[in-house]
Amino acid sequence: MPESSQIDYDGLIPNNVGLAQDLRVRKALETWHPGYIDWWKSMGPEGFQNAPVYLRTAVGVGSEGWAKFGFVKMPEYRWGILLAPAVEGRTIPFGAHKGEPAWQEVPGEYRAMLRRLLVIQGDTEPASVEQQRHLAATAPSLYDMRNLFQVNVEEGRHLWAMVYLLQKYFGRDGREEADDLLRRRSGDQDTPRMLGAFNEQTPDWLSFFMFTFFTDRDGKMQLSALAQSGFDPLSRTCRFMLTEEAHHMFVGETGVTRVIQRTAEAMKEAGIDDPYDIERIRSLGAIDLPTIQKKANLHFSLTLDLFGNEISTNAANSFNAGLKGRYREDKLEDDHQLTSSVYPVLRPRDGKIIREDVPALSALNMRLRDDYVEDAANGVVRWNRVLERAGISFRVNLPHVAFNRHIGEFSTIQTDTEGNILSSDDWHARRKSMLPSTEDNLFISSLMRTSRQPGTYAGWIAPPRHGIDNMPGDFEYVHIEN
Ligand code: BYC
Image (cartoon, rainbow, N blue to C red; front, side, top):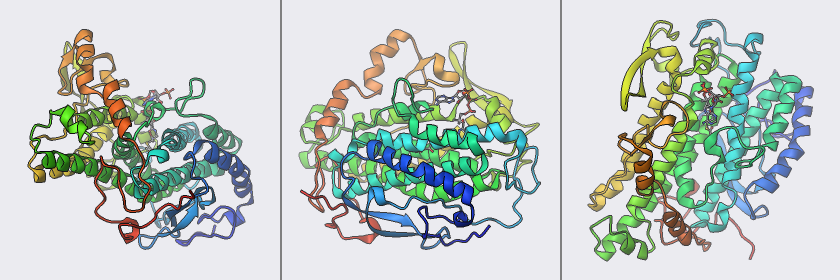
């Protein structure tokens, strides 16, 4: 099959997988395409579908110069099928088949397991677009609006990535799954998205930044684990998705940083030293730091649930099968089979949280979650630098992993943000001080007024340090007809 690092743009679907020669899959994808566009128009960003947006589009899959920027109306975005270049002689890096040549076709015995992984991954992509569909109306600037749309079109492309694998390798079953991916809806009572956090709302821009910081980072971890897969087409697909994913986390990390920066500036200007002087800080039109902390508590805990149960036979099976590895599996130094090693897992026992060694194979979700927590903590350190520089004593912290959990070991207990176990009464009494309250959310939503003059920003967020693609500060990233 002809494959290159250059993308074939001639057909309806840009690709580097030789679709022009693969009539069966091309037809399946072309049949799916109108339903996708209908979904995008009805469930994608509300309004703005006819506005030209300064977006990046992938034009290659090599490490350099893989994207170009230009004005595109979103429904005309060239969603394509892009795989990272094949690695010659690649072998299965872990599990029972370690060292065997990587699979180019789905191994029969693992068909159901692989299909489930693809469907779960695929389901999160359109879900996030649905969750964010109302946000453009309140964008704090054209720069931010453009970043939202960039994230949205790329999540759309990530859906295409999974749909390609389903349609190419799973025949009729795959086509049915692809249709179902357009049928489920985030937050719908009858046909919800598959994982919890993807049925929550993203009602305001602070939530959007927290989501792209925390939840897209779960995407990074899960895609990194799938990029190790012995099923080579999945590995190559995920490797290229990770290239795009980096920008999504940039949007989250810098978004929260800019909110914190604006709050710090507003406090300084007004001579406020006490970060808990909430009413005065809010009266300046800035978001107080304790509320930012509560939003972080919420999004961190919702995202931890996405790692599944700490102790999971599913995770052990997919590792053993060579389908889903560990974070940076290829950089780890052990036997990559884990048949005789253990891993420590946190779990509640007799009113305390203890650490207990369990077989490493069954603790793979826990291990990936630990890697995630470390990665997220590094980002939080960067947020806190703004506060350090401003001489403000407050620091944002990640809550304890047991806090506000609905999946796994901690789903049966309630704790505070330090991990102290609480009675049900204490939890209800203290909830408002640890998670955003209705008043907090109403305050944030009262700030969500849009700023559409190029180069201007809503009062609760600082401007970015640099433009996208080095554009000047007053660049008009979205052309909106008045
Ligand atoms: N909500 O053995 P267990 C992204 C279910 S984000 C609801 O613990 P396993 C993105 C589970 O399905 C990354 N149900 O789970 C970010 C199972 O049900 P069944 C998305 C849940 O399989 C931002 C049962 O509980 N990709 O890309 O070890 C924007 C027992 O399961 C949940 C992936 O997640 C939950 N939170 O681990 C856009 C990678 N957790 O089958 C995109 C693919 C568990 O017994 N998925 N359950 O009925 C996987 O690797 C795994 O399926 C999971 C769960 C990590 C999700």
